[in-house]
Length: 218
Image (cartoon, rainbow, N blue to C red; front, top):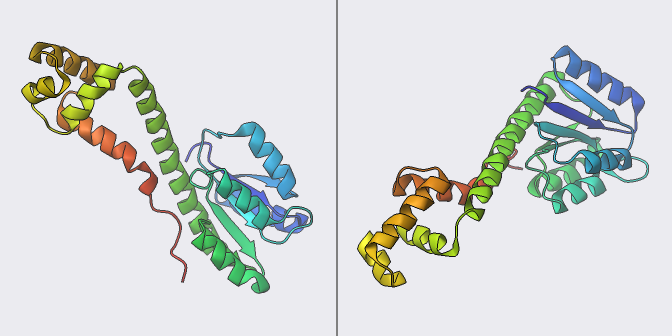
């Protein structure tokens, strides 16, 4: 996971240092922040990150709480690229379970197992990497779609619906030869070689939001 980053947000300096040391020992890069406000500001300047990342977030902190920061990330639709793992005390376990139901990747009650935490961090980074690949593919697809004319979009919709050229021509009131020309241009602009490949490309984009997330809460 080249350039992967684990962001650590905790107002306890000892916790930040211990976590950073743990991650260094496992060859994972980390950045630490003493407050949710500091992290939110840094993220605003650097988003989109362009690399896989996850967030270790303390629930209770002075100033902005971890829950408030989580709600902001949720509202900004950033959890796919930045999975959140909460660090919590016993009194906040029920609250942490609720965040998992709302989209957090996981939570760990202090004190926690180093090995178990690192395992989940690595899984969160893998999920972030998958989301990044999907986002890049979606962006490329949007650029290709923008190159299509209105008529080419009409033809593409009917091609994906598996209509033969003759029926496409009848529905659009154009000649079969014109359909063939538009069809060829659609394939060229969308960088596909067949109607099946085109349909799979568009179907894959529609299903990009159905990626698996963190553990199912119990």
